[in-house]
Amino acid sequence: MADASADVWLVVGLGNPGPSYAGHRHNIGHLVVDELARRMGSGFRAHKSGRADVVEGRLGAPGADAPRVVLAKARSYMNESGGPVKALATFYKVPAERVVAIHDELDIDFGTLRVKKGGGDNGHNGLKSMRSSLGTGEFYRVRAGIGRPPGRQDVADFVLSNYSTKERKELPFQVDTAADAVESLIADGLEKTQSRFNR
Image (cartoon, rainbow, N blue to C red):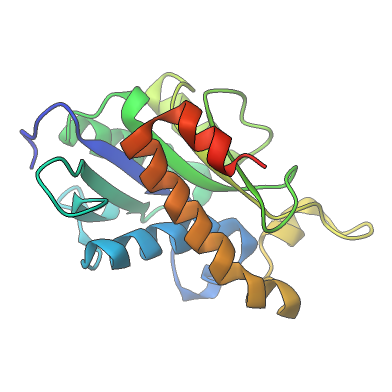
């Protein structure tokens, strides 16, 4: 697929690797690309770069017009996500304007999401690393809300902790909605997607 046509998209789920991080708020990006992989009927496998796990295929309704997509999870930690993302973008010849990052967002309430293109990093180390490696912040972001930490809990401790019992019950709905938003973004563009999902 390295010589694929110009309409290939790279969809990156930001998170930290390994089972000890799997349930953390910071790993919502991984959960969403796992759901997208399930919809594509494929499992992740190691990319030849050795720096990420990927799924290649078509996303959306079956048919010739379904866009070609590479789903990715970096094997590095969150703050070093950019290198693997850049390597994949280069390998698949995907420009920044067809890169989608799915990530946790402190400034959005849990259970809601926002889709946008470009903007700042807002202290998010995964976005900061991607911006540095890609040389631009003009990629799409699907921002899954996790809310602010309660009381005086440290932000780093909060994002690197598991969802509450109540949140875990609602989490599948948020993951499903975020996956829907990615499909909408690729199929229908930013404006229509924002009108549907940015509530």
